[in-house]
Length: 373
Image 1 (cartoon, one colour):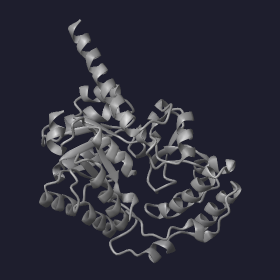
Image 2 (spheres, rainbow, N blue to C red):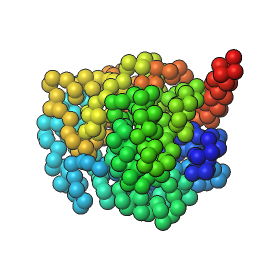
Image 3 (cartoon, rainbow, N blue to C red):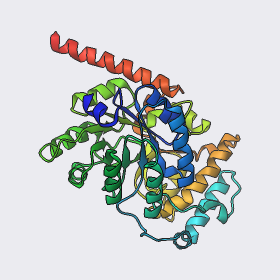
């Protein structure tokens, strides 16, 4: 555990990625390391979130994850009107009709986001401006090589840079680019992920970078308890990066409808689909995917254009479902990994950390007993 403690100050190498500030603060206070998904905010709202975390984390370390994709269908300076013009009318009409079929009143203007996508390069820079004004202990990027500006600014502030990878080739590129921490995210993971399983990816990445530079590797993808975390560390991982397990906590940003769908779901109820962001990401399967991935769909648009439809549309879906619209509940979905099958209740974030620590200790005891027997 020492590499992670010395790098980011975490007492227990359990990293919790969440879009909810309450989860981030609770995990860090309990000895883990909370990471706020910053790309779900505007620069102004991120400032408010980080200020709140600073006031509630009791001086414990935390980090920020900002999504600056290496490849997407836009360039620096692309404005909102230009992006909006790239959304075909057939996609807008398809989204409106899908809502109406599920008892949700909607007009074309209701399914087009009025805010610039967080993946615009200039938005990413603005989010970094905010993040580096706070006492963060880690900044992370996903979907490609961490941008040079992130690496340069992090070095000036003395903050390590992490990167998510889904293949050993990606890991090699990231290490050569200069990142300080790798998150090897297997295909079981929620959100944007590759196709290689965690069990294969973690040792593959560790072996691939061994001759280049000594960089700690966190295991990610399907990790829902301390025993799994111990198993990954037995393979050489320096800790665990988790996301889905926090979606079923009382503090999480997820709706009550989604939490109940998580509890009812099995590990086979997720799907990798482009229909939410424009890139393959694992989500809970719903009627949304049956429609957008079906034969009558106009097809997913590239990132970030697809999100300009899905963000406002899912906001209406969630509101309708939590208001009692039974048809709307069929559409409810969110990013979640195959580990959803291990979720059986809603617990507090601090309780989850305590359980991870206990399960981790018990797993280590079993391994030790096996060696000594």
